[in-house]
Length: 295
Image 1 (cartoon, rainbow, N blue to C red):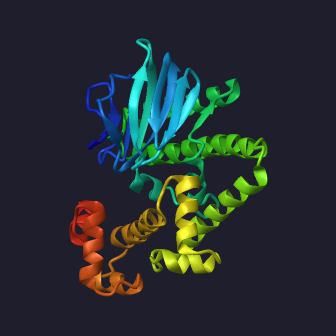
Image 2: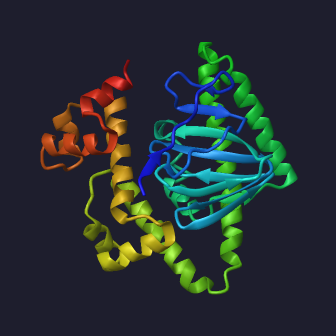
């Protein structure tokens, strides 16, 4: 079955930044039929009423009031059903918005990838109240986003907001690990997967062969592929491509390096192969991508 790209909706009741890096809505208006995937957005979903059920990359997810769900970009949702009174808040955030947070010195993106296996958490009263405060402040400043000061405030608020959410989800994840009956085997797999992601992140786009990372971890490429599929429902090549794109985006957006210089620094065989990689993952040439963020 064909996968339909899921995009943030429009409307007078929807708040958004100028570049659509953040899009916020507190009213659920339905879901398209079929298999759905947000290509370039992650989505924070806060269930405020009713119930919903759907398949999410091989997992069956149930949502009810006070549940928080983190929908990763490029993950697939299918078989969505909900009660007539279902409602939720949605915060759509682009990959660029996450890079701009500059949060990975102390909060590695590997944490996010690990959380993909436990994307839902039920909020306690204290956490729910704290996140509601963040949400209301974020909405208030997004309504006045045209003001220059408010633009910085919005992005800072979102950074703090997402870090609070990651802390809540990480606590829930750690608790679930401790409760596993076969913790030794499963925990080993999770730790090895985490180490793989950290190595990919540290390579900063310079290493792109699965075989090289498998050698660093002293496992076979086949074993690494099976492990990543079981733990993260992802191929190693997909995670490598994600971090390579991050490295490219940083250089295109925040430096004046030429395409050839970027290709050389990231160990592409040529500027042509570098351009092909960017087009395959962004549907833009490197120059078009750079222009988009400098308009």
